[in-house]
Image 1: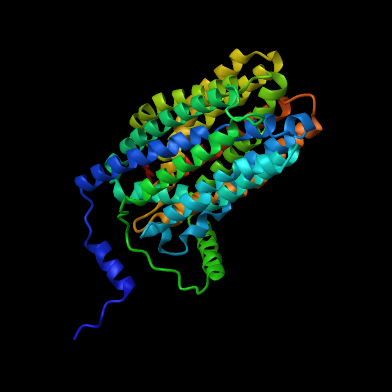
Image 2: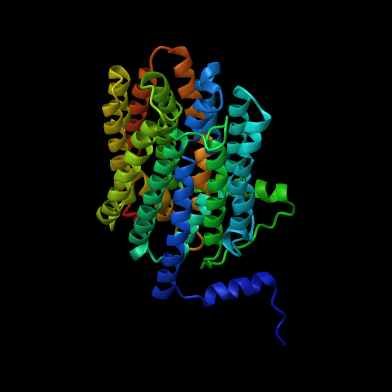
Length: 447
């Protein structure tokens, strides 16, 4: 007599019987298109978080623009250290309930923005808003590894890059659209007397974001069977997930070096982020519309156009070469920002974000698919969650470094931009060395 199947046994048997088909790829692509569009629109509507906190919530008037800009750009990245915690059970891998959890507690929480504005005054509004953004980021930390796992599970490698690029282009179009709408709404006459239009914008964005995550929830994820953690209790499972991440970094030296290159790139990228709203507020004195058009719309338009081109150019090429090309191109971005700070001309800001979009089309591709190239069979979630969690680790260095440089050199942003450019060149060198080492060993990591 056969023994009755346990839940894990049934789950593993279903996974073994599953064969990925073109029909599943196409169905995933269609469902993901709607969800990606909603997620992109949400990101666009919320893309002005730092500028809203500085200009509309009292930080600029109170002289706290550097502190608020640093915190509101840093804390969401720091929250990514929790990404690997979502590898503790079936929530991301299997039944997808995590997407519903994130929809409620990660997105709908922005319905509280009007309450913050009504209950608090002065810079306390901005710091409370920073806390709300940080809380949402902790809850949503599992979204990148969950989505990366979805692309890896439901798309075969031969078409993964192309389908990912088209989904990304749609998302970028909606980010651009959402940001453009947000800039117009925030610059318009208040719809509610004595209150800025952000009290209306954020509840709308919250609802849109929740619906997008529900859309991802509806996609059935086809994943290779992976053993559950044997640890008992939430804390022990989280501890076990971090232990697995450390073991992965210890045992896979190529992936470790790849993450080192990304770590250096991340420090450079993150140290610039709080300096950008300060540049626009103090040096360029830009309104919401100018800030949106220069930073989000220009960058996203370039990114949207270039993402399919980069996917085509990267097809069949080593992910290490694509990564090195992206990092070296990005080194030009802080160089043009330096010219912007020196001249205080908005036209150079537009040029800088064209460069940013061109370079980030490559970074966007390898950030999402690069880790998958190092996963050797089985479930790639350990790689994608570890890769995402490293964002939080480097955020603890990059953002404080940018803040310290802004405080020490209070009259100039040049040290921030020059240091970032140098670090990006170092990151390029690290990845190129990794490429030579892997080629010498006969390895060809293809995303």
